[in-house]
Length: 436
Image 1 (cartoon, rainbow, N blue to C red):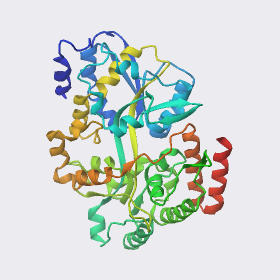
Image 2 (image 1 turned 90 degrees about the vertical axis):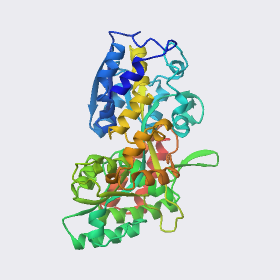
Image 3 (image 1 turned 120 degrees about the vertical axis):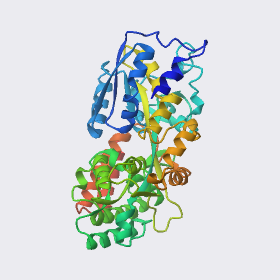
């Protein structure tokens, strides 16, 4: 990690004064996540560089998102920098709860010339830039609301040893997955065939469900007669949910309704689970040399509709944003800038933590590519590249995202528990329309 200190310690004469907020103390809040670990491991270097004390506050996934909403909506100044994604930021920005970052990026006294904002992949920069009109989000131009810190695409990853042992081919569609799961359960009842999130929270929708649904032609929202309208009760949505719910019933663990990504990761690492559909880096982390699953996890594109030509993969962008109520914005910006800098991103990647760096420079760096292409990571790099070619944000930019997607997650549980698919989706769509 000494590279970060070296990079910043030998700043050019025209660089910013990194000690201009010396003595400040800030709080950085984030999900409990290896991406957070990547930054936390390097915090002593930031504090040495700037004289700013950073206190991390890290929380489990669903608890974090609820706490984030409460902290910012009450305009509490106790958190200065927060981890967020595109979708939660849609709900937070219109209420002036997030600080726009343009003036910080464009201030030569606050932002180093070597920061190179354009080094972030264009799609990620664009996704975090929007304007607010009439209380709604218009993407593609406007203000910068957060800085990419890491990102994910959705893949199917699996235990090669388990599938090879039982002669099972990697499934490509939900019906194929259902058939593979039945074969696995017959061969070894002690194995959970498929790990997938099922909690009553939007995080269970943004991975497997939305990626596969998109290949069926499902849209969370569509424009109809010039107005925004939900597409969750469409013919395509009914077809998708019938296949998906059947797959969950045959494949997922009995604990599905309580399973978040922590359970998905643990299952695939321990070998209690044969396959998983989730963020691609989970497989990578469990392939690391010395871990029980090292070299046993391989990667494939996410499932697609049986009659679909292509798979689809949603992206999630972990980002760092500034609390608009922070009373230490200058120090907060220096931390965001440092944490998303080229060297800190690269350090996190080669430490095996920040796997999907949002910076193009990381993906052209020989040190990272040599590390990620080690035999224990099987086909991680090649699959990442092929999936990333089709990876895109699957949700429609809008305020009210969380409420609608939480409702979708609740409806999914109802259908898995036996509720009629068409009737449940009709009720869900009605609830969403009433809130629009």
